[in-house]
Each structure stands twice: as C-alpha cells, then as structure tokens.
Amino acid sequence: MQETWKFDISTSLQDNNHERLIQEFLLENQKEMGIFLSYYYKKEGALTEKVQLNGPINFLENYRGDFIVDFELIHFNACLNINEQNREKMKIQFEIDQDSKQLVLTGPYWPEREMDEI
Image 1 (tube, one colour):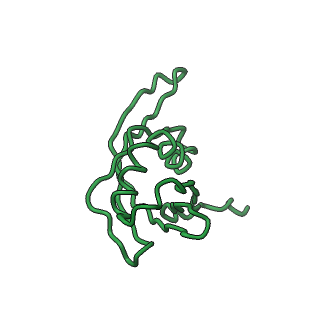
Image 2 (cartoon, helix red, strand yellow):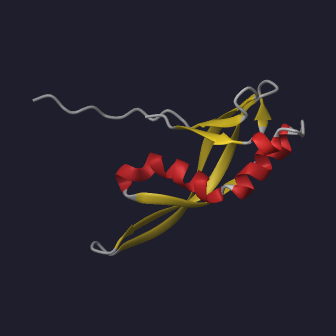
C-alpha cells in the first residue's frame, strides 16, 4: 500500500521559497495531514493527530524532495478498554506540480500481506 494525496496550493505559488511554502502548508493543514497518515494505520484501528514537521526539508530537485513528520498515533476502542497514544515518524515524498498548481504528497510503500493459500 502506498498513499498519495494532492492538495491545491494555487494561492501560494507566487513566492519561490518552496521550503516556506511546505512549512506553511503543514501548519495550515494539520487535520488533513492527520487523515492522510491515518490511512496507513486503519487496519490497526488507529488515528493520527498533531502532525508536525520533524527536521529539514530535503530538496532532490527544485520541485521534488522529502521530509519527515512526527505525529501522535492514537489507538482507541471503548469495548476493549484500549486508549493508547504514541509518537511516531514517517517519511513523506513531495512534488510541487507547477502546471496543476498542486502539492503531491506520497507516503512510504508498505507491502500488504496477501491471503494465505490452503
């Protein structure tokens, strides 16, 4: 499984400071980033919250690179009396698409286990 989300950044592209653009995007879209990262933990029944940039933004080219975010991973199940919170990290790749004026975020590839044969 590998998740990809596209976010509209058309109002932010006038400035050529792409590092600041990404930093501001992460601050303004914490809730959306939490939803994006939660897709990786849906089988565990966990949600992610309080997504923050952890460390520098690494540019591989002018409009591509990666960064690491940290976040709270929350497991909650009232029936089983589970309520746990842990800090986790994840590396996210990004690409700024100048034509469509979008920020494309791609999470890591996590292989999924196929069904066992009988």
